[in-house]
Length: 79
Image (tube, rainbow, N blue to C red; front, side, top):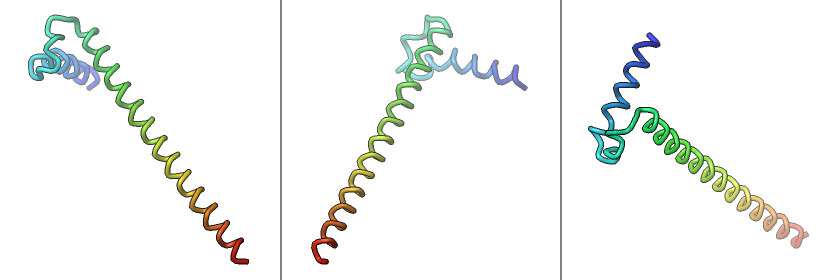
């Protein structure tokens, strides 16, 4: 089963530059170069998505904290 998966992956890596024009520059390069370029692209996308998610979480947390501070200060002033 593992050998079939490895063969399918190798075949896909070999065919992708001919199927998608974005990867046409890898047609005459080795599979290792192409695999490295793909893994770098995936790594950048994962980093960016994780970074954006953390920033959004921080922004939401800051907004909630500010809203709670404002609500708390308004309640104190009414007492």
